[in-house]
Length: 135
Image (cartoon, rainbow, N blue to C red; front, top):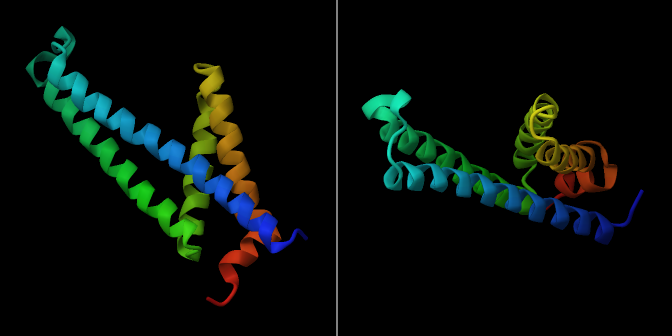
């Protein structure tokens, strides 16, 4: 079992990695909105194309803000946030496996980040102990 300082350092690394993921999600949502405003609509989408892109961008951005808040609560060592992050990381890991044939580099990065997150916050006893100790 590792000492408490090492477990806190691992926790900090996980938080930083998940904030990077959150920034990418927010950036994707804002890109959808920006491209809907500045680019002409593809002909196969008809006149509703820009509205669809704005809607999708807003939805992605809302999930990004929600994930930012969950990671913040995880950083404050709330156990419910740890459980939500385990679920989100598991879904992300499965998504990375599914996309491995399409986008190899991004899928490998996704698998490493989500796999590391799952291992440490679900199975590492020292990190889990940080969430179960009395505050």
